[in-house]
Length: 306
Image 1 (spheres, helix red, strand yellow):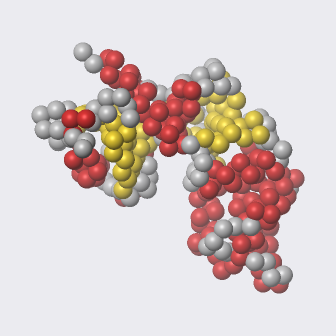
Image 2 (cartoon, one colour):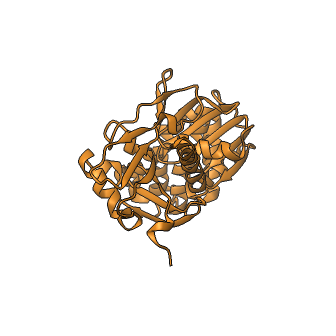
Image 3 (spheres, one colour):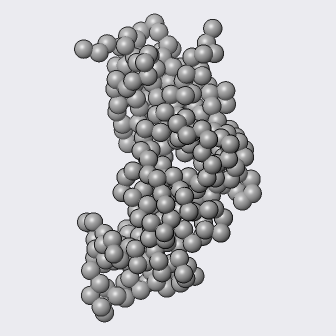
């Protein structure tokens, strides 16, 4: 049976919609892994400590301070305590750059890692930089492109351990809005999408991204006059949006060899799209990389303790 004394520190990934924590032992192996829907977007600054305690209260020991290393939107301007951005080009931020949060509970020693900003063109990331740190831990000599799929997908170029430049695409959010709030919602499937329709749409956008908005309405029209199935409609919608995104990124980055930091459905969609365009991709587990990045920050923190 695990006791609180076995828990040396806590890692937290605090996004806009969710909070995930890992309580780890001195060997950095997870003992407890939990999550809640109390993301940054649902909280005011005075509610963060209580939301954290809901998940970690039983992992804390009276009279002992437990280090808690946090990445993600908890460090945003609207979050718990702002962790100012580092400016690209830069290596992924570490514990030296973290913001220490004042807490009411004396058992908490909370450090929030900062995100990264890019001045021209203007762009920001929070949380992804910790995944990139985890990626570089096993591939320190990697030179090339990373894709971090999500609601706001990031593309980041790495050179000699430095994030030299990056771009964000709101493809995931646009997809969700079109699915839920546009005229297209009437003809889309809630089940698996059609991969053939997806791939065909990706290839179309690679050649003619300027046709995106017209082809989007074409999904609705095809459903009405040509019996386009809901599965094919969903596949086409996803393929048009991701295909247009890849067409936009192609002049900026070398897409021929991309490491994808993700292994969920959306990450697989990006891998399929890149394959359709005859590019190679290497999908990796994003959760593992996030925890690895947080662990690196903790180890540095541990070495600096008196």
